Length: 508
Image (cartoon, rainbow, N blue to C red; front, side):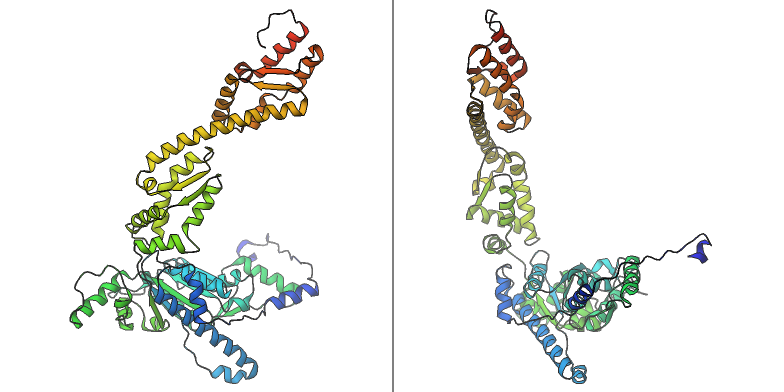
């Protein structure tokens, strides 16, 4: 810095207090937590069945791949303790996975719930955001560092994490590409190293904060924490829609097999995916070495209206739970009839975005319901087929019903305030019908609860009415609309009248 900016630069050394021995031991222990895995493939599939509808083949293949991967990690770890030399000689092809399927069919959901079940850190990213060097987009090695962050700094646990990269088809290299493809072939090459086995610095050289932290740590303890993470046991899962792949394979199958459907192929299904080969992926634009590191290949099939109905009805992660919580926050219990759910599923299926289409349909349908019914006094909302077909008409009916209920609640709140006032102060106040109407109108217009409104309007009435009681012995007072419009004026006239009983009474 002095070379660049001259002698005006000064350097200060910051010394952190030394950590207590117990803290250092705790830090060391956290870095050596043992990862345990004892699940069977059917255990993993049973867990996925709770959250993901359909995709039976994908769930089965993923369950087997995950078990094989982590069982090998357990075996290798035990062998390293018994015979490190032999452990180095063991060869194993990692069960990295490539998932093919359209958007919204549950690809991310599958991998996330597997990571939750086996309790390992999970990182998701889009391939289009990365480059081989980090100059364009982000650095692919940051995915590995993010695992450490998700594991709360536990490097050992991070080394058994899962990295999921979506939109991998977007970095396929064009066949007629000339020159260096930074966003495609380059990213494949960098990912290739990570998917096999390599050491990744936990602290990026481009991260100034991480480098300063390492310096402080070295100064405090005389050594820095473990500074690399090995990717040998990290499971990599990549996915993409591969729109052109289905057409490419379908053309070849049609020419090679008599009787195969000549109809246009809309989505990749398991029947067609059986014919997908490594050569198809290479022709699509992937490097042979890259696609070779993804030996487990599975397709997630498109979702139809029945699948979307089942997702809403039976999945533990159903969107219905989200909307139940949203309406409950407004004091409304929402429930759904099956016929309404089928109509919603049919509409969502036309969105062609899988389960994500459900959120689009729900948001459009219930947007006005949340706005107008919140705070209306309505406590129950039953979603019927009629509501789905005629949402505006049903909403208007519910708003009228809600307005009526709100009015009744506010009227009851006014009488409750009068009763509480009488019990508390020994002074009985009674709202006549005109006063009740004006109180309801003001509460609705000013969006106040009846209790808050009355407490505000009649805050001085205890003192004023007590004075009247002292002067005249009177303990019962009827309040009319004038008391609601100008409460101070109304009370003042009552007090004056108590001093001058012969004065003409304007209010009584």
